[in-house]
Every structure is written in C-alpha cells, then in structure tokens.
Image 1 (tube, helix red, strand yellow):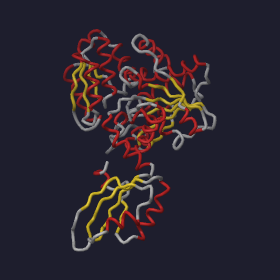
Image 2 (cartoon, rainbow, N blue to C red):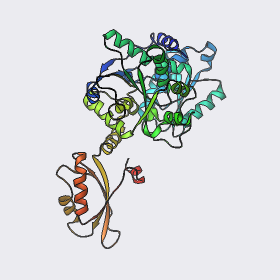
Image 3 (spheres, rainbow, N blue to C red):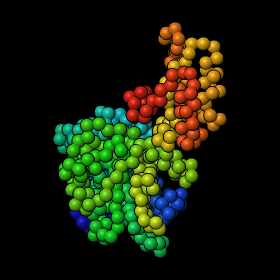
Image 4 (cartoon, rainbow, N blue to C red):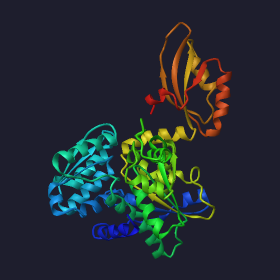
Length: 416
C-alpha cells in the first residue's frame, strides 16, 4: 500500500461523505502548552470514522461479489459503517456483534441498514464475533469486510488524517508536528502511517491504546501479533485481543510510537469533552485526547492533531463513566468498616472520620455477624484527592477497624 491508495480512497468517499469538521481544542492545548486540533469523526453519518474503510472496500467489489453479499464483525462502529455502505451501494450484509456492544449502537445499525442488513449478536468479545463472521463468509460465499485487517479498509481509514491536513492547508494553519490516533486493531493507525510516511515523514505519529486491551504494544514487543489472554472491554471500540496481520507490519516498519492510557483516564476525558467542550465522545473516541499531557508530551508550542474517532456512546453508561473517572482521579475510595455493635457508632464515624467536603456514596451494612462488630462496605467521595491523607489519618485514630479496598482488588468487579 502507498499514499496513492489512501488518496484514491478519498476520491471514492468524496461522493458519499462530506469532510468532518476540524476545530481547535483549546482546553487540551492549554494542558500541553501547544495548539491542538481535533478531527471530529464523531460527526460522520454513522458517528465514527469506520465508515471510511467499510465503504472503500465494498465500493471496489465486483458485481458478482456484491451479489453474494458482505459480512463483518464489529464492536458496533464498523457495523454501522458497513450498514451505511450497504445502503448506498444496494448490497445485502450481515453483521456480528459481541454482547458487550451498547444497545445504542445495535439500534443505529438497524436504522442505517434497514432491510439490507441483518444483525446477529454472538460471543462476549469482538474476537468471538469475528470468528462467527469468518465462518459465515466461508459457509455462504459472502465477502468478509474486516474492521481493520484489509488493505482497502486501511486505505479508507487513513483518509481521515489526509483530509485533516488538507483542511489545515485551506485554513492557512501550520501543519501538525504530532498526530495522535486511537488504536484498536490498527487500521486507522496503519492508514495514517502509510500516508504520513510518504507525504509528511517528519511528523511524529502516536497510537493510543486502552491499557486493558493493548494488543498492538504486545505485538510490537513480541515481534508479531499475539492474542491477549484477557482484555477490559470497557473501551469497546478499541477492545481487541489481537492486532491485525495486515496492520501490524505497517505499524512496526513505520516505527510508530504506541502508548496506553488507563480506562479511568479515558472516562475523565470523556466527561471533560462533554462538560467543557460540548462533545459527546464514546470511550474509544476520547482515547487520543486522554493521552495528551500525562502520557504523550509534545514539545511546548507544538501543533497537534487529535482524531476523535467516534461518538456512539450509550447514555446509560455514564454512571459507570463517572465512577471510573472519580476512582482514577483519586476522589472516590471504598473501605470495609468494622462498626462496634453499640448505639451511636455510625454517628461517631460521621463526626470523627468524615471531612467537611466528604460524602458517603455507598453504605452496605450487615447488622450483626458476631457479638462485637458488624462490617459495612462504605464508599466515600472526597472534595479533593488531596484530602485522602487526612481522611486516612482520622480513620487510623478512630475506634472502628477500617480497611481500604485497593483498586486492583477483586471486590472492585462488584463495584464497577
């Protein structure tokens, strides 16, 4: 693949997609003492850049292949891109989704595809759905449309970065010194790497993975794609167990920098994007911006392009987003408290232990498990992370036996 493949894909897409907005993100720019531009792929018709790769692949199929139909696996966004492409090109398709795919994405696939696209939910992860889709393609003769691991998909996804550079030129703005991109299986990153290597080789390219599904970094360490034994599926748009066989060598040979960001940091960035910038980002959409400052540190004064990959976020997930963000920021903590079985024990805890800005957000109490004490699970939200040492000191001095539950404890599986 070459930069010409990316630019030819852009020509195909120009008839069905308008350029997505490019806008300054001053809040994040202040965080890095530079200029940050965000490419708003959340404003695609399917609210994700995935439509670029899916359409570019299906548009190049022969008439015979289109007649046989297409099939894909997806965490939700690629399936919407395929559904959109099927609608535009009149091709029948089937999409396989893991059970973790938010309801909002499932509903959008049905709307975009209409009678042309059938939705099937299989397995607990993207990789489970991918195995089902591959078996379907072998059984029926339909063309498998990979979410990232195909040259035509890669070329289509790379058009997002090429388009952003063209927009900056039109605005008369300086081209980026750094491009920061979210990574799942690596299609977008590989497409960007191909185009930048030929057209702008001096630009620093950084791929950002969720810490709980860092498959590209694992592949780079091993020298080949490897299957992660476990992944955290929270960042569903980038929760991939294995980097692509097509995408990995491109990323490796381009010597792309790949980093990871904790899921809690992603949640905090999602909330900042919503509350400060008016942008509704899904977890994968916030990945790249979340890395800037703490993980990716451009030189002061640098121009940075960040790709916001998608906005398909289910509103029902925001409670978990807030919870993960508070824990990551050190504002929320959980404790096991052994209360004496006597009148006034809870009142003394409230008066002697809690600070003026502390709030109890969870209290699960077992009235009696022996003659002297009764355990309680207590969640406390602090006014500031800096208040924690004083809280712990008051707990140490108080009569109840209090144990802080660490964030890596198995108990957290029942809290998040």
